[in-house]
Structures are given as structure tokens and as C-alpha cells.
Length: 402
Ligand SMILES: Nc1ncnc2c1ncn2[C@@H]1O[C@H](COP(=O)(O)OP(=O)(O)OP(=O)(O)O)[C@@H](O)[C@H]1O
Ligand SMILES: [Mg+2]
Image (cartoon, rainbow, N blue to C red; front, side):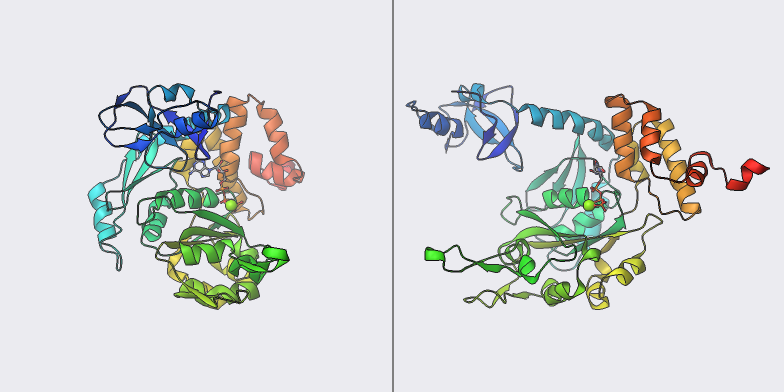
């Protein structure tokens, strides 16, 4: 049999080096695949009888066990290895930010509601964030940590909505995915994750489900949308670009998002669903990069009734310098980019030096070895000469004439 890089449709992330004696009975997923190839094998792992190895799969917090012999068929795919290598750079800095567990427990314990079931405790592991759910379950989250991460996780594990507002490229979408990873279902399994881009043009059916001709002889059947599915069956749903959406569309989900029941206007058999106890809502919106500015967002699109429902759930995700130090471990480069950002802000230019740019600049210059001159030309392409002088050299137009 050829090498296998996925089990249960999930990427193999790691296989343990050493074998141990199985402590539980379970089927071996590699044997199942080998059997499909015509081999006759004992599929079961029996406790005390078999030597087994641990396999970590993407999205699973618990290890999967396979026979020691079967582990030889497993391999981490090349693209997964690349991804892990890239992540290694980001992970370096996590160790540098230890957290007091007692402090976090105390803060969370003061939360109203489901605090007994959902105490979230953060500790920092080697290269990853470990988020304990207070019920013996632990989620492992990849990536470096934004300063706002803890606050977002506290809301999320308590099933409170989060509303991330911040300038482009500050790490909102990345953080939403990390927070989703950090939030386990009550049975300890991962929460299904979905993202809905809410730019103008999105219809009610995209949020609350629609009828499609998928039944027998083309008859119509109701299909949940990502949002209504997560709402009714549990899941972490991110509504992206919320400030770019049509306010009328959001109005129809307003009460559901803040309440306990969502109407399903397109479902002929079930007119409404109750909010599942494992539904987590994440809203994401943009502002310009001069400090978060909710008024701008509100004026642009969002209805005040909508904003009011989430007023206490807003987390302002600005550029985080500590995170940027992790993503760009070249202080000289950082100082240059941070100076530009300051000048852009001082002069109220509609230009951005985002965390995305910082991370990419570091990667391009140090890993892809693209020259600094090429990067400068690329970054300032399309800028006026005055703007560039002002930001790159701090020179005003008049300075040259003095
Ligand atoms: N915590 C993090 N760990 C590692 N990389 C990160 C992290 N946060 C942000 N990045 C890097 O910055 C990039 C931009 O982040 P992200 O896409 O989340 O920004 P955003 O705030 O959603 O931007 P936009 O408003 O434009 O959608 C990511 O693609 C990633 O490369
Ligand atoms: Mg985004």
C-alpha cells in the first residue's frame, strides 16, 4: 500500500516515534484502509495485546491510535511539513509570554452564566497555545497570540458573541479561526467552523437557509445556511465584512443573533429553530488604520439597533506590536515599518502598514531573499512622490525648498 497522508479525511500532522502498549480497544484506521486494498488483517487494536503509536490529525485534539506496524504506512504530507516549518517561526515567541493561570481562572470565574461548565484557562505550551475548558478538555491552538486573544476566548467559551473590529490586516480573521479552535464543544470535540462573507449582495437565504431542488424528481428541500446550521446544531460561525453588508439583510437575523430563536422563513416544515447551546457567533468589521473607530463602521453600513446588541462584545483588534515582533524577528525592519505607520497616522494618510505587511515583508526579505529595493518599489507602487517622501523619509514638500 502507498503511504497515507490523511486519516478520516484529516491531514496527518505527526506520528509518535515510540510505541506503547494499547490501553483501550479500538479499530485501527490504517488497517481499515489496507483491508480496502484487499489485504486481510485484524482491524482491531486490543488493549494489552498490541503495540500502538499515536497519530495527531488536523482539527483533532486527541490522538488517534494505530498499530505500530501500520504507522509505517503513515507520512506527513509535504505541504503540511512546509506549513509546520512556517509556523515554527511564529511559534518561537509564544514561550516568551507566560501567563498567570490563577489570574485567568479568577477573571473567568467572575463571569456570569455558564462559568462552572466553561472555565477557560490559558497556558502557554512549547509552540502552541493550550486552552483548558475547565471540564478536563483541552484545545490546542496553532499560531502566535494577538493581545486580544484572551478576551475573545473568554467570551467564546462562555458562548457569548465576539465582535472583532479593526483595520485591515491586523489579524482579525486569523484570530477568529484560532478562537474557534480554542472553543470545544461540550462533549470535548471540536466545534464545526464556518465563515460567511457578508459583503453587499448577500441574501436572506445565505444566512437563514434556502430551498433547493435536490429531492426526488427535482422536488425542493430545505438546506441550512452556514449561520442557521451553526445556530440550530452547534458551531462557530464568523460573519466577515459585516460593515460592508446590506443593513436590511442583517436586520432579519438581528433578533436571532441576540436572542434564543431564529426564524427559518424558507423552511416549509420547521418555521424556527432554537439556539443550540454550542452556537458561537463571531462578527468581523473593518475600520481605517488610525485606531479603531466604531463610529466609522456604524456610519458606513451598520444599523444602530444591530450595533447596540453587541456593544459589550466589541473587541478592538488594532495592530499588536508584540505579535509583530513574533512574526518579524528583525528589529531594524520593524522599527522602519513602525516609523512609517506612525507617519501615516500623524499625517492622516489613507495608507496602511498592516500586520499582514509586516509578516510578509519579513518572509519575503529573509526567507525568499527578495531584495529590500524590490520590496520598497512594490510597497510604494502607486503612491504619490509626496506621500512616499513623507512616509519613507519623514520629509514634507517644503523641506526640500528650505
Ligand atoms: N496570530 C497570528 N499568528 C500568525 N500570523 C498572523 C497572526 N495574525 C495575523 N497573522 C498574519 O497576518 C495576516 C493578516 O491577518 P488576517 O487575515 O487575520 O487580517 P484581518 O484583520 O482579517 O484583515 P482584513 O480586515 O483585511 O480581512 C495573516 O494572513 C497572517 O499571515
Ligand atoms: Mg479578514
